[in-house]
Image (tube, rainbow over all chains, first blue to last red; front, top):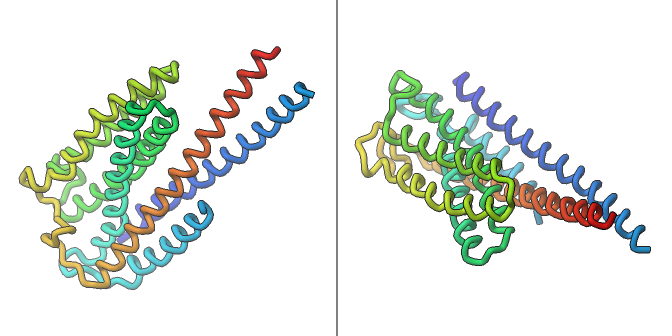
Length: 45
Length: 222
């Protein structure tokens, strides 16, 4: 039963890490995109 | 929409885990160790589903040359590898309890390992090629060829003599209705979770492309 418990903990932890990693990446990219779009708009003006 | 998927996946997973690890009774022969099935089977199902989606996306990419299909194929294969790793590890633990060894080259074990290695090759190939179009075309062709390992793994139970229990047909493991319900809920939750992650991975991919394009335009502009 300990093995089952440990595997479940590892499984859910890896999914949680994936979730956090993807969300942080989306956030970082959105910020970078906003900066780049702002720069492009400034240059066009 | 994606937020709703996440809520459903999280709540469904909590309910499914409670049913699987607390509410469902122990199995007649394997006792509590059979509960690994509630992680193993949903992971295996999602692994197959991910590789099917990946192969279909690669076919669509080769047919229509829309880069989004190639991104979908890559993201789906990456998630398939993750769930495939979970399937292999949980399967090994089960094998140790049932047959006394973690790995005994059983046809199902071996074909699933071959499947996993084939898709690891696909992801590695995609990471190793610089040119985007070449990467997409070569990757798609490889993906379609690698997909042969999916039916090989799935039908290994019917094609070759194996010790692996057939949960779907009910032979080898006795599930009560509550166990079957818990299993179905775990499969459903894992599927929704996979769809959520696939959507998130595609969003990351689309954003990366837009950032790359804007950076290129900025460099070109001066």
